[in-house]
Image 1: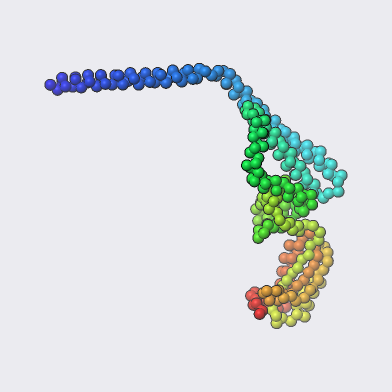
Image 2: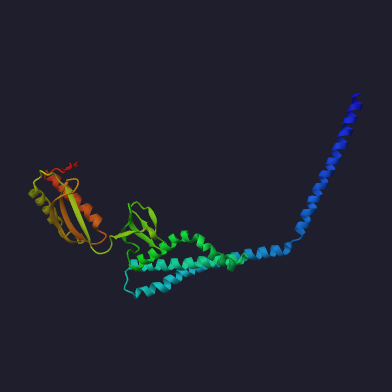
Length: 313
């Protein structure tokens, strides 16, 4: 009985599975035929030839672009640099002009590269340019910032507000960045601060430029003193330091001149002020040197230097 039941079950299973398997194979075969007919519509030899041709064209284009970029930099240095030597400009100004011209020509090269990439890929460049005119209305607001950078950068260079190598303070509202100008471009200005950080500042965000490298600089040293200190004694100590340091620092053009006691508005802090004119670029070193000399001389003469201050009513 069990053998007959098993035989019947196997026969039933075979009768059900065989038609399903046959249907599955028929569907697979049908899909293969559809795919084959679809694929056969294409001329794959032509497609591969065109693909290889475009890849070769793109490779040649990128090689030409890199060569043109390198050649461009060499031409700018060989042609423009000698021409600038006949113009009465300092080295920083010449370097700024060279970088600006190089930046402008590089932008043009990138534009040409993009144009030819689109052409090689078979995209309708003329239609894209026409569409760009329509899209320009949509992206106009976004382009305002870029145009502002260009215009502001142009006037920064035209008015010679700063040059590469200048020590500057760039201010925009509460934000101030101080350092040395590394590069001046048509869109951004690069300033490297004292700790080595390189700041990329959009030209439109430069509201005030304080250039510390133009002309001689004035150094003011305010040494804090107590209101009860003998001013005549402080004057003598400071004058002694000035006499000892005389002729040692040729970068000091005028002074040091003792201006005497000062009272800071708002805090009521008392200080003793000395002023001097120094060559551009030496103001920080001279300030720290003389501040230390005055500080040590006061302590050696028994004059206390207050560390806290009270506000006078």
